[in-house]
Image 1 (tube, one colour):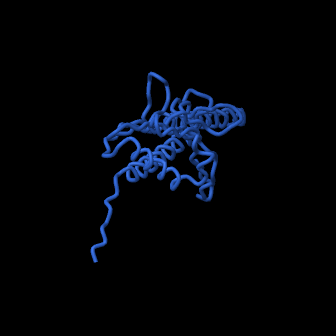
Image 2 (tube, rainbow, N blue to C red; image 1 turned 45 degrees about the vertical axis):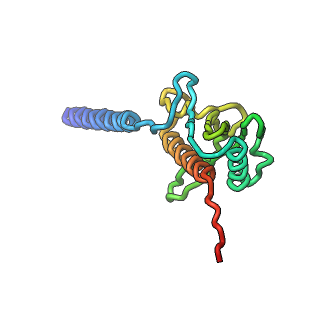
Image 3 (cartoon, rainbow, N blue to C red; image 1 turned 60 degrees about the vertical axis):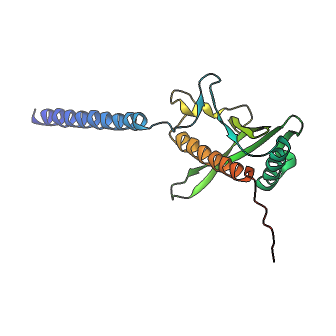
Length: 194
């Protein structure tokens, strides 16, 4: 009889331990997912797309600004024939397609490239101003896979690493924008007065 009571007591203790442990594990996973905050990327709720867009006032004629933009594209991108889809100086429009890399972290802390995110860039130019638009972000895959799904934890494409990937894309696009803005500023010609 004592053995049966001892066994029942042991079974009861194990059951309580398993229940508490399971609860803690599930609660921590739920908490982890709940605590994750989506990155602050520019999201257009009308088009349901991530869109970086700005009108920049810049001294220069449409032709001058177009030439500066083309010079920047040729310097920034490695293979401009693959990047430039359209370049119309009269219309003041340049359409490009390119990509940025995203990474994941291996167990040892090593960063490994985990994919490429394609994007579209439009530069529209008028006298004294230009507008850039980065949009149509999609993971390079067999089928169209927009990264906007990475903002929604209920989507099957989402997992916690996707927030890090969105931040990587955001950082890289902001670096491209900074480079473009710098290149669009008129360079002062230095006169060699010897």
